[in-house]
Figure 1 (cartoon, rainbow, N blue to C red):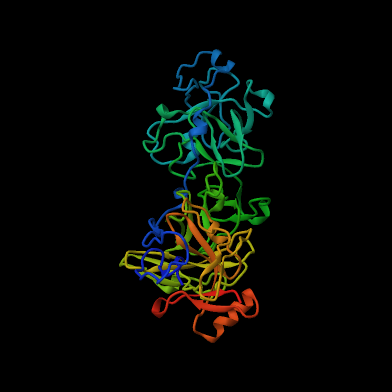
Figure 2: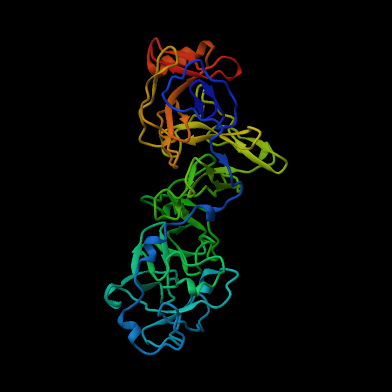
Length: 461
């Protein structure tokens, strides 16, 4: 059974056509052909979205006493000072032509490793050990410069937490050195909290001196707290530390990308270990999530490229001549996605429309806690209690919060209305048994429609 059910009409997330029931059991408009569709078959972690820069833009320009010191021969648009570094990577960096003897010249363009920088991006920066080493209103925070460079801790405007944007200089739009990457934090220097590192070049939409506050790793032993899993091959790194301490291992079918406003989503990316195919990426789903979240999907050309995930062998479903995606060929009648899931609260079968021909992408996805209250049906298939709404048309993962063995059934996509219902095999002896296991003795499996579109759901005794 696909993800979307219209009570009185069944649709595979917007692709099926069907007839009206004699009476409409819910006082709401039934919408067809409005479900989400896959719109991006090949994103990378750089597709995961970026934080709202509006709050960052409000920070004032540098007006500290540093600007009143020795004259800078190469002032920048924001009042800082450009310089010419003579120190090769990884340092230690020198004062070079920085006018203030307390400053070092840091080559952020070289540190980033970014290809395509149109001109050197090297800026004077104030090293520090404690806040007292900095000007008033500044904080001592971790930068992108490595240990031993003399610039690992610099005077910043504020500190950021894990997976948040960091910015090593006060670059503004007029200082853009990459045509397609203006600063996301113009005029603001954002360092990282202790224990984190401002990792550059994690996404192409960031400025050359901007990155994410992360913990790079080689194994889970180096991780902990909210990011206990070392996603081993997420970043390029000359020192071999290519892993990032992440929220969890996210295999095929997991929700990925930005989960909280202000975070970049680097710690919530698809798994890069040997257990997950390298063609597994975070894919946006139009209408289901906002632009910063997606689902881990694996591209393929044959079933051999779809390994088993959580006990279920994958199948390569071809969409046209060039695109194939690994699917789980799962069902909601009853739901047959077993296993505890990444978060330990079970898994659920979700179907998504893959193309205009109605081909669907069935994936076993992790359920989310806390569980919400399911809807209830009577023996005629009429809704007696809508329970908690499980669908947000604005984009959220509430559709994964239905309790174990139930799934979110969309009644009105545009209005954002969904019901948690227990699916069953209507017309088969085991259908009623399934319902009694979920709702108690006397529960029955009722059909919404007859014929090939019949879908069974459990009704109260």
